[in-house]
Length: 269
Image 1 (cartoon, helix red, strand yellow):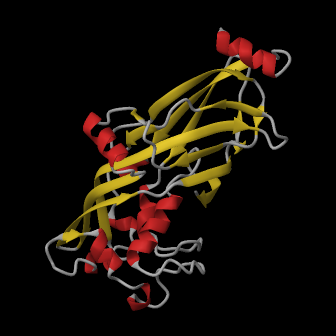
Image 2 (image 1 turned 135 degrees about the vertical axis):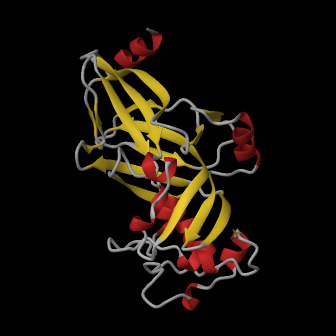
């Protein structure tokens, strides 16, 4: 009641309130794997861990009105069956919130949500990581493991969805489910911006220079994009993206679409 009363004061009068159920989901590509049919070169991926720190979800309007915000950052493992509810925001003024934003970034105060282990939560905080992915990349009879940890901080703003429109609309007495969807196929794109980017795995398989069956971040760092096939791994003019590790890190800033196939403007923080 106190929270509801405070929102009524802020907005001068209560014209009705609802709730927002904030959730996340890795969809089938993260929960079950990415089949060879999706890859342009016949590779496939099975994730065993996909940890993400979700933070700073906020409702606002383009006219400057601010609404409820996420109370704390959450660590989730989206390989676990979902959707996973992060938080229920109550007493949300019933209206159109057309300027929705959130972040994926390190957070020392993060807590676990869903079926994530306490050890993984602590490891994410101690390592100052925002994304941690592990799994197996296969191509034909060849399989390579990977375990990559990123500490990037990305802000997703002005989120929109082709089915729901801009932001979020909260109805009086209703509960609006807002899903921060995580797209696991983005780590395998061969272009940072082109809508015609292909999903490929061969360059990553080949990056295992010592042949020990594991693709390390150090090995990705050793692969210059200029050494890869012409027409693949386009950087859209990003001058600092020079190696395959740089490229994967940049792709890590694209994994957070909005409510399924929606989009947000992403910027590094």
